[in-house]
Amino acid sequence: MVTEISIESNRATGVVVRSGHAHRRILTHREVMLCAGAFTSPKILMLSGVAPAEHLRDMGIDVKCDLPGVGENYRDHLISPVDAVLADPISFIGQDRD
Picture: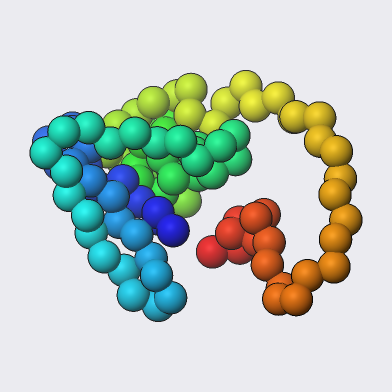
């Protein structure tokens, strides 16, 4: 799971991923593309220090880029609930507790 975008000199250089309890940095020589959906994309940007500076400071996150639009103007999406019985407890939304 991606937990952070690595940013050096105002440039995305890779990502930090978590697997179990281990964290690993993966660097790139090209671009980083963030496609984590309406909830998680802003979360990753904010945890990476890219968001409204005042909000990041309030949360104790180092500001890398003051970008006021991150996390703003969210509009709820219509959803259709799907119920199922699973062999193991899994959740796509459970990641918000990390």
